[in-house]
Length: 103
Image (cartoon, rainbow, N blue to C red; front, side, top):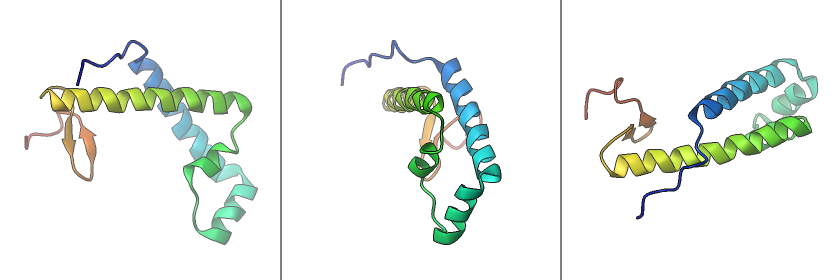
């Protein structure tokens, strides 16, 4: 596996969008009565269902976030396979090495 091309990785933008969408989704779940009814009727809600409630601008931001998230996963895997960066714990995903003393 060759060194990955991560020139489009922007950690700060990733964090910004991650925070934005955590707040956005929480707000949607609290305030959108149609969405609340849908959840009550089916007791299931998928992320793509929530995204359909986003504005067009937010759907563009969501696409940007997904692309950055994919790059983050590739970066984390690359680092993991080369013994550096975040560590992987089954069931938890990649964890901050400062939080994990069991490695």
